[in-house]
Image (cartoon, rainbow, N blue to C red; front, side, top):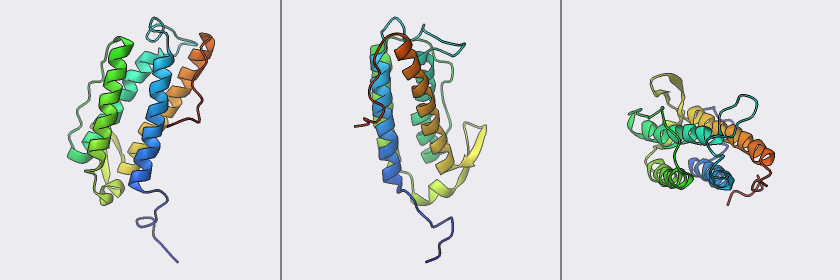
Length: 160
């Protein structure tokens, strides 16, 4: 059987969404594991605080899916520190928004090219993978921070 790259499928859109949401559930537990007073203050090696990284993830996640659905690419890039409870609430709201918007993405859209936020060109599926990769990368930094703080991070393989 021969297929072209346009028709070959390795993972369904629904499986990709669930994979990402598994990462989001784990990242949420990492955020929650941080001591409140260290979330936006603790750093190592010149890296940003994990709270700042979590805000970056928020600014990218739901706005990316919203842009894919609507071609409206608004994002609030300059976020300030906020209490952990507020960050977790916003995380949960973004997670629900991703689920709602995801159902509105036509299958063909994943193969289309767009320019996210007016500056990042690429195929929709590549842009989504970038957002997921970015989250995993920053979550890894969060794991290092938690260990440096003497906090046992959640098991990386538990995404339920």
